[in-house]
Image 1 (cartoon, helix red, strand yellow):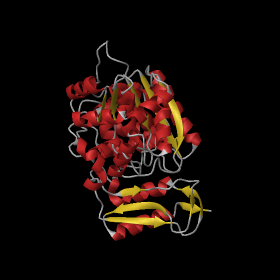
Image 2: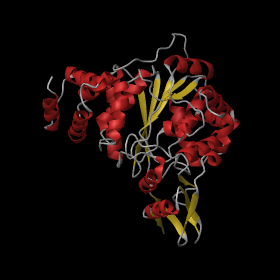
Image 3: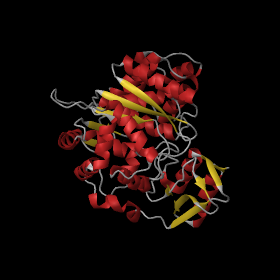
Length: 410
């Protein structure tokens, strides 16, 4: 098979066969196909797209590039949630233990940050000792005992996706609908799920900028899932402002802990309950009651301990990861906040060091933003709109300038 010819055909808008896609993924996974050729093909897919048949073939090939989780016939129903990414989206940290309190199993395989959007694994890595990389035997042991586990892909689960996921982040091909679809669904198929809820974001802080693009992605995932025998439902959610009140790894874990205690911001709790209700065997009100009872907080602590994390650190995250500079961004005049742009905040948090510009970059767990004011709020002159956590005064100043460009007060 001549790879340059396949790249050229896709570049010109042609289709690739199931067999050709299987061969591409097999060669890319083994290392026979170099990264630069896959980058070129990914860019061609970005501009030309893929048919439903091609996307299903890509998803299936990535799924079968490794092993899948197997469950006994007597196992409880398996459910999961996946978000297409956003700013301040720490919902997975709350959803997994909350659903596990419902008697279902949540084998959540998550990813790292892509572009300006944060990654669940990066947030979990900020918890001292927490292991996001576990063997399939360990995954089964944790979920059989506690009902939920939050891990990255093992070396054997969807290795093609793991390689391509990192490549997309540094090659400008993150917002490709076929590549997003295949990446999400191959991991979820590998979990052996019964139900899946997909949280598709749109707006300034999402990969999909418009509602129309979000509908296109949702349709792609539903059609691809149906072609591969997966039952999935979709919620569309705006991402024009950050979810909750923080963006940045340790800061988001601290906020998730508050939400698990029933003390989270209203917008964060609402989306958590909306998504859980879509796959739960309990009502939304019952889930609300469980969240406010503290049971989900206990379950989260049990999961953290089972995965090697320091449970005592969970209520001290901002002390353990403390940025040297904390700078308040204050309102320059009174009025009502009309815009708190998620993209501007996400870009500022990325440049502070909470995300990656290149696949090998390290993550600074302490930096980010908190006390983020919500649109529609009335503010007086001098009120704090957001706090910047930075490594240096210069970094804080640069972040403030970027954030202010996305704030509008009328």
